[in-house]
Image (cartoon, rainbow, N blue to C red):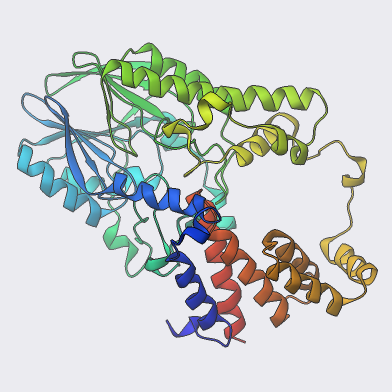
Length: 454
């Protein structure tokens, strides 16, 4: 950990860790978002939950869940966790329930926290592996190449600074050490392409339904004889991640809504998501899915209505909110996804990057604009002083923005980097959205680490 140590980094992270432990009455309101996120952590405690006869879900063993379906002469696994270590731990618990051979594995979609441990569950059983055609044909994930996708999960942060990921425990750091030894993806052997595919495996009737939402290849699993619905990542106990700050192709809110209508139409008695704990009882399932559907649709409808009025993204995010009857719903809290980011993603999908202000057609470069702002404000020293004053006033966003004007021309400016890192630390500690928290704190770490290396 020597690369964290500098005249700034050591005090900064000492302050950061101290901030993480604050729980006094004085700070309760200021850090209310963080405390809500912290209160969520028990939801991800390790547990193998019996949902109903023959259906079990392993929660808390990895970022996502793995689901066991016991058939007459074999087992079916839906989603396989992030890597081999996590999968082996869950498989050991599943083995206590049944040692029947694994006949089939299903991937609800391509994300690594659902596909990384398949080999551990498969063992020597040689099961068929099912997935939608689009999982096999999907383009490369440019988001992960263009920026560090792990920052939204806090992969490079000291463990004591990570609360949870908003939809699961801390993301497993499978990229460290020997990543190949911890990855267990198995390529699909059965590729599905129909809107709804009926199957019978190990005596269990299964319907696999294409339901794009979090990804285009997404499917859900319906067990008609038991009225059990496995929605994958199209439902979990957080407002959905319609835009991922790690960088992804845009996720369409209108498609999310349509897929949730499919889920509702199943009239399930049990809902077993691939993140979060299961929901038991037809009335509870319907209420949860209805609130989820209505919440996303409300944000979509409000955003489109505002766009038709000519509102730009910065104006829309000030106006579009969940309606009061949904804002407090436990399944729509912004632990993982975020309404504001979703509004911006919806705008970009329908209207693209241009916001209608002709000034933005060919803007000045950040460097040129910053030079002029600094001159207008009275020089670099004046702007730095204002940024430091903003920190003192707890105006952290403004402090970060002011430091950017300096750093655009002098990226190695130590004092400005310190202001920005401190602002990010303070902003991160006030977030309820786990991905925002982790990204802020990771960015602060990089500023200080890079500074200490000079």
